[in-house]
Length: 619
Ligand code: AHR
Image 1 (tube, rainbow, N blue to C red):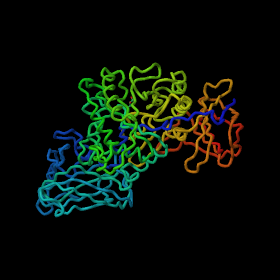
Image 2 (cartoon, protein in one colour):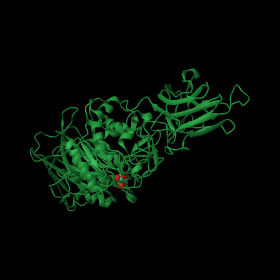
Image 3 (tube, rainbow, N blue to C red):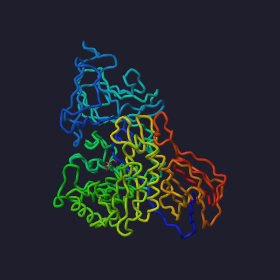
Image 4 (cartoon, rainbow, N blue to C red):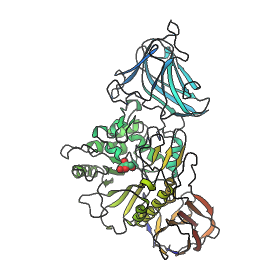
C-alpha cells in the first residue's frame, strides 16, 4: 500500500484553532469526589434537601444513644442553606456519664475514603456553634478512627459564646492512608451545631482547588476548549434540579448545592460556574458553556415565559469588566480580568423538545444582541439538511458500535459546505465493543477523528464523552479517565486523544491511500510548529482497524525542507481489541514512542494490525 502526501506550500488547509477539546460532565462523581479536591462529602448536611430531617449521609455518628443524639435543624447562619447538624452530647468526662475513649461526635469518610498523605498539608474550615464552653477535637484518622494522622483542637475560648464561629486551620499528616476519614469529637456535655465543613489538600492544581493529578491529565491533552458542565446534567430530569450557574458562585459556604437528579447524587457545587471558567484558563482551554434554555427531560418552560436575562448575567459574570454588576462579583472571587467566554451552547440534545426552537430563538437573539462575538451552538443536527434557524455551530452526538464509529469517519464527507459547522461535542464507542474502555473503542474513535480532521472545513470542534469516572460510582462506561480516592489512569481512549493534540490550528495536507483495499485504514498528514522550540514537524497518522499487517510506502512531495531523522519518531498505540487499562495495569495500552532513524520523505513503514500510528517527521 502507498500513502501519497502533498505537503507543497499552499496545498494544505488550516484546521480550526479550537478543533480538539474536552467535555466535562458532572457524571460518575467526576467533579464532586473527583476533579474538585474537596474531601468532605455533603459538607453542608443538605443532601436531603432544604427541609429537616435532612440526609446527613455519609456522615456517621461516633457514640451511641446514651452519650450523643444527632439530628438536623434549620438554624444555620447561611441563608441559602439553612440545614445544620445538631449534636446533643449527653456524656461528660467531668461528670458521672463519662464519654467513651476518644469522645463522641461525627465522622465523614469523604467520597469512598479520603486520600491523606504523609507530610502533606490539609486546610480545614468549618462553622460551629456550642451551647456551652466546650473543647472540640478535629482529626484525620484511619477508616475505623483507630489511628490518628493529623489532629487539632478548637479551644472553647476561641469560639463565640452561643453564636456561630468560622474556624479555619491547617494540619499536616504524620502518616498515609488512602481510606481515611475526618472526625469531630468532644468529651463535654452540651449541644454542638455544625455546618459547612471543608477539608482540602493544600496542594491543588495551580492552587485553584482541582485535584492535582486529574487536572494535570487534562492539561496534558492540550485541549483547546472545555465544554461544561454537561450533558444531561445541564438539563436535569426536572428543571428544579438542573444546574443553575447563579447558585454555584460566591463563597463556597453560601452555595446551596443541588441534587444531580440525572446521575443521582448530591453536589455541594464547590465546582461551580467560576471554577469551570478558572479550570479552562488553567489548562489553556477556552470555556464553552452549555446553558439550560428552560428544558429538562420531563418539564419545560414556554417561549412566552422564558427570559434569557439570567444567561446574559452569567456572560457578564464571565466577561464583564470588574466595574460591571456581575463582573465585580467575579473580581471579588479573585479574577478581576474577564474570562475568555466565546462559546455558548443552547441546551443539550433538546432539538426535538416542543419548546426548544422557540426558547432557542429568544436566547440566540439576546446573546447576539449583547455579545455578537459569541459563537452560539444549536442542538439541531445540520449535517443532513440545512437548519431552519440561525446558529454559528450545531451540536452532533454519536454513541455507537466500533464498526459504525469507524465508518462514520466518512459521516461529513458529503455534508453541505455551506451553513453552520459541526461541533461533535460527544462521541464514543459504547456497549459491548467498549466495555469499560477497550482498545477497540479507542481504535475506532481514532479512525473517526481522522475523518473529522479530513472534514475540518465543515467540522469545527470535537470532544469525547464522558471524561471522568470515579470507579466507586460508575454510572456510564466507557470514560476517558478512571480514578478513585488516590489512583487514576487513562483508558485507551484517553491515550488515543494524545495523537490529536497538535492538530488544532495545524495545516492538513492532501493525502491519498492507495491499496487493494483501504477499507480498514484511515490516514491524515499535518504540519505544525512546536511552540516550545519553533521547530516544524510533519505528523502522519495511520489507523489500521484491520487484522492484516500493512507494508506501507509513505511518499511525501512538496516539502520545503528535507526530513531530518534526528528527532523524528514513531508512536504506536496497540493491543488486543479487548484490552483495557486498570488500576493494576494502568499502562497496558499505552503509546510507545521510538526513534525513526530512516525518516525521510519517501520511506517504508510497517503498520501492525489493529494499531494507531503517528510518524513525527522533523523538518
Ligand atoms: O455523555 C453521557 C451523556 O450522553 C450525556 O449526559 C448526554 O448528553 C448524552 O446522552
